[in-house]
Amino acid sequence: MVDGKVRKIHHIGFSVHDAKEVLQIWEKALGIKGVLYEYKGPEKVMVGSIDIGGVAISFNQPIDPDDTSLRCNRFLKEHGEGFEHIALEVDDITAFTIEAKKNGMAFLLPEPEKAFEGKSNHIPKVYTRVATVEILEPQEESSAKKNAGESSRFKVARDCDTR
Image 1 (spheres, rainbow, N blue to C red):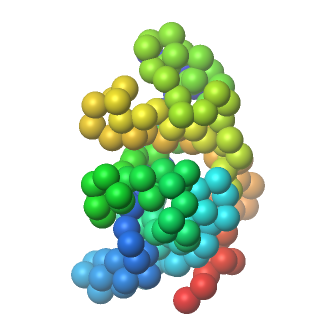
Image 2: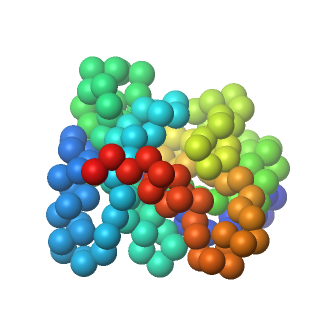
Image 3: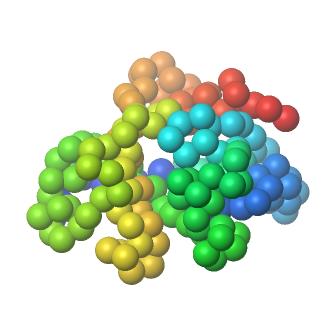
C-alpha cells in the first residue's frame, strides 16, 4: 500500500481543440451547467468543466496551440481529442511520491508543482499502461466552504468565468 492515501478521483481530463464548444455539447446532453475559465498555471489551458457527483470532467484546450512544451498539445498532436488523464486526490503528495517511487513509478517532475488548487505531479502513461495519472494534494478548504458544499475548484472557476 502506498502512503499518502488516495481520497478520491478529483477530475478526469480530456484534451480538446475547443473547450467552449465541447462544454456546450456536454451541458446540452446532460442538462448540467458547467464553467469555462482560463488556467494560467504550468499548462496554460482554457478549461471547460462539469461537476458530476463531486468529480470534475475537464475539457482542456491549449491556449497556445503551437507550444510543444504543453502536455495537452503533445497529446492532441499524437492522439487527437480524447481522454488524457485521471487525477487522484491524495492526503500527502510527498508521502505518496516516495512510496510510489519505491514501487517502480516515476513522475514527470522531480518535485510536485504548485497547482491552482494545491500541489500536483504526473505519473506518465508508460508506467500505468493506460493513462497519465495526476496526483493532486489540494489546499485545505475552510470548514465553512465544506459545509456549504462549495468546492474550491468551482469557486476559482466561477471567479475566472470567461463566458
